[in-house]
Image (cartoon, rainbow, N blue to C red; front, side, top):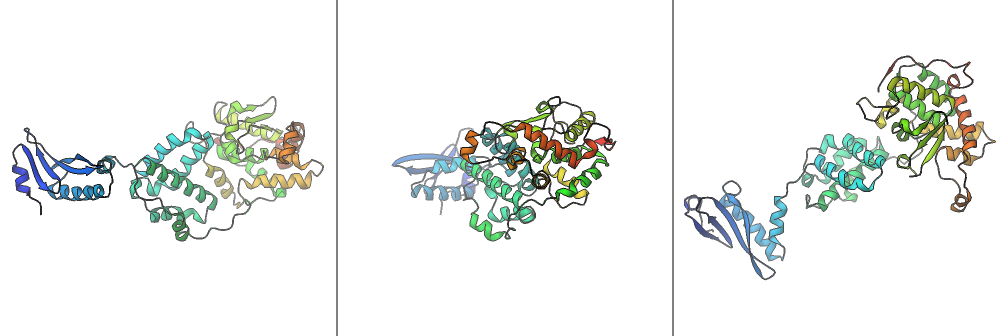
Amino acid sequence: MGKLTELKVKNAKPGVYGDGAGLYLRVKPSGSRSWILRVQFQGRREDIGLGGYPADLTLAEAREKAYYLRKLARQGKNAREERDREKVRIPTFREAMQSAHNELSKGWSEKNAAAFKSSLSDHVLPKLGSKRVDQITTADVIATLSPIWTEKPAIAQKVRVRLMQVLSFSKARGWRAAALPDSRELRDGLAKQPKSGNFAAMPYKQVPDFLAGQLALEQTSGRLALLFTILTAARSGEVRSARWEHIDIEGRKWTRPAELMKTGIQHVVTLNDAAIAILEHARKAFGEDGLIFPGSRRGSSLSDMTLTKVMRTAGEEATVHGFRSAFRDWAAEAMPTVPAMVAEMALAHNVGTKTEQAYLRSDLQDLRRSLMDAWGRFAAPSLSGDGTNVVPIGAAQKSA
């Protein structure tokens, strides 16, 4: 039982009053009151301020905190460090995510930095954004991942990794004392994901009819981006990040900088007539400065779901990425005289063994141009040729 009472604390004159077990009340001439804990650490006496009375700690709260810190001191731990850690303001997940992004993205490509933030913003912040990082449990992580775990397994895996990155960053910053959610517990708490497979692809023979149907519709930024993605056999992320400074209309080239590429290597796409027709339409609709296919907000790029939405609106289950498979199947079946290496290079894939790559000094651009021109004539004949068979694209324009 302590020596002090609430009444004694309130009426104490200036001086120092012991409660017992190292806890003291200090009263200044001004009348302000504060709590002091005296402990031994590494053979030396330390006086640790616990906070003021009554704003920070009541008598009962001061005793409780003193008991906790004395216990740590007896275990050889630094009670002062523990007190200071408790004084640190613990951020919400939203705030910790921003801090982690600001620091960790210094070593990332622009594309990876954007993907980190957008995936967490879409799938984690709605559930955990306002929750303190030290209060996020394994159950919270499971509840957050569960809605997308089997529906969007590839995205869910990336979200899980990035969510754990934020929690790990928070632990390193002293914002979280508890252990990180255990990977085995996460597996046990989530359904088994379907086996990974190839992206659902539209059979290449159906591509011309699909494009013809899309060309007849209102040409939003998202729909134009999808058409350009198909006609260049590119990845959707590369198209959504494409800027006018990457385009050489006269040279009929699209030079994609290394930071936009999955391989991390700059890649040149040869542009066929159909792809150039899409670019000209985008120029008229959205101008020729900055992003070629802008998002609805000024200066923002399209989201990864915008192109998918165009597909779903058309009643198609095939994925946007699957058009790369359709292109590859077409090249193999309809263009058998073109070496397979040319089609792989057009897809920006690494080709050959390391030895073959060491001796391959050409990017086979002339062969790739012939292949991509043929793809444009096959996929969108109305936008290809000498101009006699060119038909106008859907007249209406607006941002997606």
